[in-house]
Length: 168
Length: 261
Image (cartoon, rainbow over all chains, first blue to last red):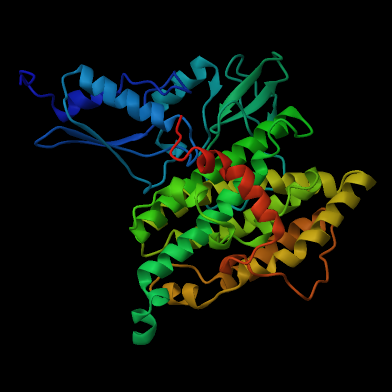
């Protein structure tokens, strides 16, 4: 049995995982999205702790497989994936530079997640800025889009429909 | 307490299993009912919305039933609990198993259930069981936009045309007698409440009524005056509808045990 010459450090492992893109939002890596919560190096191999974005997110299986594949390609023999639900994933974990990547990709980045604010039913919510032309003159078409994490809007200025990463 | 603890029904492990089934089955059964709209909703956006909410609910059920299976520790997993149990072993409330009805009926049920689920998940985040508390935190976030989705439709339909108003009022009248069961507490729940492992269902009712009435008022919907409430689901006594639903939901695993993608 051969072992890789120099085992990767925790920082290097994070760098490897930062190359693993989310299959449904390929503009961001699973590290940038906050799905990877921790990486631990044990005697046998590496344990990656992940947290799902939504409880029914169908991409989680693919994400776990991609994480394992990326680490194996770097010579890590034993990869264990652990799932943690607490603290619950929030879009607040997406950093400013990652939000800019989302916008450049054509997805309006999430606003702040207000978990405890009263739910505004039947009240106008602030419009989401168009990621294409920057106009604030937009309308929500549907709170649900191509994936659980996105809503559909349309820009009244440039007539472009676009998706918004929902704040949660 | 000692006598209760020594009987199988009174063991904390078995109480917790039962309680997690109640939480999981509510979401599994309602998720399946909602999935029946896939391809049939009145507009494309709603088709996507209802399917997405169904996905959330089935995802939550998966987490809860996985946890239940761990508590039971009898070699079953979430799939075995979902697809290989008979109706009498399902612990969901009667409300969630009723057929989907028309769009107004589905929206009314989603609204009544989602407000309940949101308040319940909010409280369960403080449960002493860390796994359940973590799942509850996820459920709470998701149930918030489920409430917003169905709440917006309550206003649109209730304060919409005569036809939409009449259909929504009729739906609420039909559904109301199934809401009482959501707030019934029993010995299983009370034993767990004492250990901070469950939320007392009856404690959720005042805030539920307040939030439901607020939307009813704005949607011009009258609160039905129903005195007698249906019950039985938590004890495995279901309507005839559950069996038909399970036949469809479980047929694949029943006919091809262990089949996977």
